[in-house]
Amino acid sequence: MFIGNVEIKGYAALAPMAGVADRAFRELCRDFGAAYVVTEMVSAKGVSYNSSKSTELMEVSDRERPAGVQIFGCEPETMAEAAVTAMQFKPEIIDINMGCPAPKVSGNGCGSALMKNPKLCGEIVKAVSNAVNVPVTVKIRKGWDDNSVNAVEVAKICEENGAKAVAVHGRTRSQQYQGKADWNIIREVKQAVSIPVIGNGDILTAEDAQRMYEETGCDLVMIGRGSYGNPFIFREIAARMEGSEYQPPSLEEKMRIMLEHIRLITGLSEKCEELAMHEARKHAAWYMNGYYGSAKFRGRCYQLSSYAEAEALAEEFIELQRSRGIN
Image 1: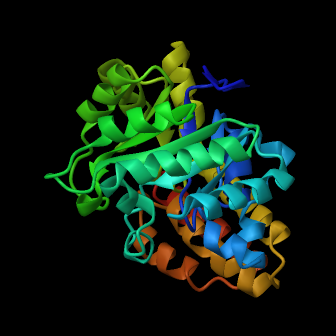
Image 2 (image 1 turned 180 degrees about the vertical axis):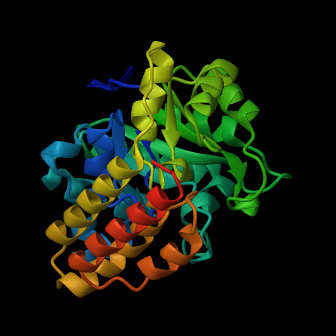
């Protein structure tokens, strides 16, 4: 598929998840076959205030490409200026966040709150599209709540104002991440617009991905929480879609990739090792989900302060599983 003039090769994209989809995880997921990745959301207002943290979040490496930078805000001019700033990192795509349900974002009229004002959605897309020479995409939700389901309306307005693709999360803002994602709304958006539609919500397995393609007709699926501690899901989805045999990762491979992930986090961080490990802790814990005694080990992950400690914990975890006949 193409988003504007950008070719996307593969079957699943990594969702732009704040606090999760940092550069280290994006690089790792691309290694495992993610077709496309998007940065954590970046505050347009923070960029306008010359926030170094906001600018750092925009950095995209060659290993990630094709990659998009996601920005959020509610002022067309400020969003356009942030998009121009992002171009110094040469992203293939600029993505606009109209779906974040977090109160600190939507409470300020940004993220999913924009869906309450479709006209403003169009103005933002138009301003950003006119400011940069790369495709502009939008990530939306089903609507603000069950009484204002307007994903189709917003998607059409975004298309009319220059959006080259739209990603749809099948929950309303009021649902947050609870309940079941409505895939019907993804199908409805797909039928209403001519630009590519990316489906998002409740894809935890390769079977889920295939079913979303079949039930919605979407052009690409986007993986969020299903990727936690599981970059392998992109390889699994590719095998499923191509009808080839998939070999699940062994325990040893999971721990090896967990340690590689931690090395990436600490290596890319400008913080000291101990502080960088704070970012790595949740990821380490996710890799251990589903195994014998994992609750205890996940708790210990949140105490890690060095890579050496992570190595030792991984070895201990492997030994415990082997003692139970688990490989």
